[in-house]
Every structure is written in structure tokens, then in C-alpha cells.
Image 1: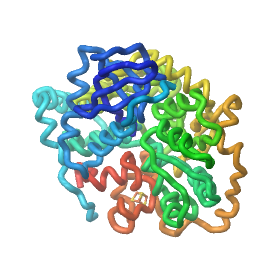
Image 2: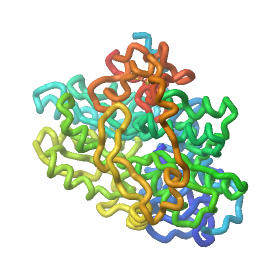
Image 3: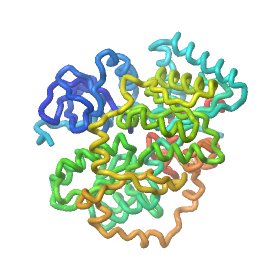
Image 4: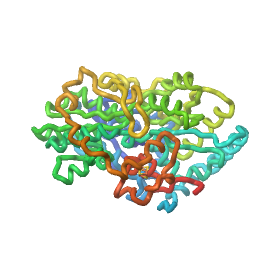
Length: 98
Length: 378
Ligand code: SF4
């Protein structure tokens, strides 16, 4: 549950960011992000909140594990945890912005 | 023991990234354990995701015989105490809508779990995030209680929604736990001889690695903060074993791409604005001073414990089920036992019919070993 999931910011709207998680578009909240982000940045997300902007030169290494995991079958536990982290990000757009 | 072990599905993937480096790290770990010259060298990690990766990628196969890497109390669901589950059960039985993370559903309480209350008609919903819990409250007039579990990484999300003016019918039943204090407890347990801790990367993303400096000073045990990739974990363990070999008491950050010394200041501010630490029992382990995160007085209006009179006594006329009393989750999380030593493992206790909390959560040692096969030297 603390594994989190990285995603690429597509757009920022106040306290909400549109984030691309390996091809899945979701909304994540920016209330507790460590520094400001903009489109193109990668962020680490946990239970629907971005908690860290991932420095550019470290993105590839961070993504590797998740790319392996997301190729896994539905019933793999660690893969399922990553998928539920993606599901933790809101599907719909147009949130209040907190 | 008939452990229903599948082959570690990701074992081959370890070769995919940098096999030479993985082998070099494994060799280095082996050499250093030999140099230490006594066995076993015991190190503990405190994170379900670490255990998942260690089991899934078959990392214990690469560790030398003289090295024990054990999982401590790194599963927030597993350490949620019976009375905490009972509070949620009583609320749901009384007709309050209880929303919680999926893993909490089947954690046994004294008499029953939330899943059982749900099957009896209780209003229990699963959410993936605290924000979804608020959304549920926003769509109804009835009282909605968010039964919130997880370590500091997850508590930050609860804090963020608490400060964002949730609807008046929303409240929080906090079962959040704080990891640093339990490391102190486990380090001092007479039966465990932990020589080093591998700290969880994403909890440290929030708290920063500096928080472990005082721990190292007090207990003389080195700490390495590590990430979750197989190579991250191998590198972390290599550094930890090196510190043990050299008798160095230090904190090493082996996960600099996510962890800084100070951590995420904004998240810390939210966390400590909403929560304070109190002492409390961690299931099966011990009373942990400062181990529980509870809402501060300023947020009393959101505290389900103040909004409702939660009478647990009616549950406590019954003892926990006999099988539950055999569960050794506590010993496992304290590092003095392991799942295959439990007579119920894979027999009476399986993921579809869990006896203990460690078989419920995807971060529980028993559940992880049940899925991936646990021990290298079975
Ligand atoms: S196998 Fe089941 S009963 Fe045994 S320690 Fe693990 S969770 Fe408890």
C-alpha cells in the first residue's frame, strides 16, 4: 500500500493535476506535493495524492519496476497494489480544486 | 510444511535490468557476511512492499546462508489492534456508513470483521483514497465514517482531506500508525537481535532520512533507506551489511531519487497539523509509545471517536475465536518467528479464509509468503 505509483503530469489546474499513469489518464491531488509541478513532470503518487516530484534524471530508473509489474497478470499481488494506486486517483474531471 | 508456493513470477525479471550489477551486489553481500564471521547476521525491513519485492523477485535466493532478512511490523493493516477494528464494527452495526481501504474489510475483530457486518446488511464501502471517502459523504445526508489505516505516508492523505473542509456528515476513525517509534520497540526486544534496519523508501519520502539519526544514536543500530526495485533492495542490503561489518552506526540514504534528508516539508506540516502521536497497542506486538496517530483537538469535530459513543463492551462479552488465538502474526512482525512456523499457515489460514490479519493484507508477511512462496531454504 505504500508502494505508490509514478505518473506524468499532463496538466495542472490549481490543486489538481491530470496525470498519465502508463496510458491511463487520472486526476491526482497536489495538496502535499513537495514542490510545484508543471506539465511534463513526473510525480510519485500514493492513495490519490502526489507526494514527490521525481527529478528528471531519475525518472527512467523509477519507472522500470512499474513497467515490469504492470505487465503482470491480474492475480499478481504486487501488480494489483500498483493498479489500486492508479485507481486511487480520481477518474472524473472537474473537481473543486480543494 | 505444504506451503502452496508458486514460483516467484518475477524472478527472471531480475536479469532484465542489470544482471551484472545484481550479481556483483549479491557477491559483495556474501563476502561481507563471511567477513563478519558469525551467523546469522539479522537485518529487518519494515515495509510490506519490500517484502513483496523480496519474495516476488526471489531475492532471498541470492542472499548467503548466514544472512537473515526478516520483515518487521511493516504492515499497517496487520498491526491494527482488535479494539480498533471493533470500533468500526460497532459503528457499522449501529447503521453508520463506514468506508475504508479494501484490506481493512476482512481483518478479524474480536467477534467479527467489517466484511461480516457488510454481509449482514451493514453499510460498509471500500475506497482507494481518502478523497473518495469524502466524495461518498458529499453524495449523501447520512453520517459517513472514514476508517483510516496506514502509516505516515497514508496518514498524510487523510490529513490533507481533513484540512480541506469535508462535509459536516464526514468524520474520521483514525487507526493510522507511525513507524519510527515501533522500530525503537523492536530494536529493544530481548528475543530479536536486529543488527540493522532497512527503512521504507516512501515513508522516508515524507519524513526524510534525518529522522533516523536519533534512532541510530540511541540504539547503535545502522539504518539504510532503500527503494523497491530488486536492485534498490540488493544495494540497500549491501550497504547495511557493510555498516554492520564495519561496526558503523550511521544512516545511509540508498534511495536518493525519492528521499531527502528533510523529506517532504509540506506533507509533514499537514500531517502534524492534523495528527498527534499517542501510545497504543500494535496487534500482537507491544504497546508502542507514540505509535498511534490520532486527531488533534483542533480537529475534534472530525473525530468519529468524539462524534459517536462507541460502546465496545457489547462485543467483549465473547472471547476471540479459538483459532484466532493461535495466530502468531505478532511474533512474526516482531521478528521472532516466520509464517511457516505457524501450524495454521496454508491450512486453516489461507487468503480466502484468513485467521490472522497477516493473511489478509497484501502487505502481510503470511499473505505474501502464501502467494510467492516465502523462504529460500525450505
Ligand atoms: S498463517 Fe494465519 S494464523 Fe498463522 S500467523 Fe499467519 S495470519 Fe496468523
